[in-house]
Length: 163
Image 1: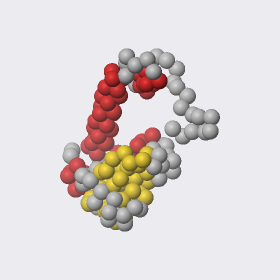
Image 2: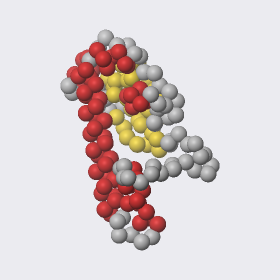
Image 3: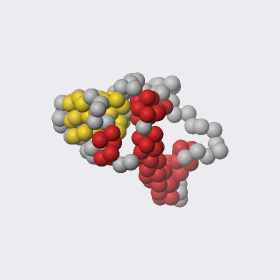
Image 4: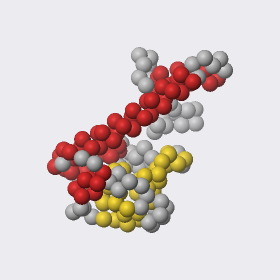
């Protein structure tokens, strides 16, 4: 299944058009819908910093929070007038269309491959550093799942941070 097939698959679901700057998902807030991009573009921001711009029809957002039963990990907002199809009962949709589940799993696996490759490259680049940047390989090793205990990602300001 590809992105064009996702657009066709969701043809019977409600189309919603969002004006430029309108939030579909808010970082830290629970979402209850899955969105499939039909036209326009979606900006993804994490901690108010731009992460990516999604413009391929058939792209899906909201899947991570729904699959993990967790709040949205990023803001997603319309970049220009943007039309999406909203799927309110995502769990039933996943069950009804196993090919869609595989599509989402493939997209998530591609993202993970890109990120882990990038992290491995960073780890190599900073392996011989003796200054503070020399800690980068250790941090990355922790992120990639070493045998060490999980790092405490909280801060003095926010010990129970949602990240």
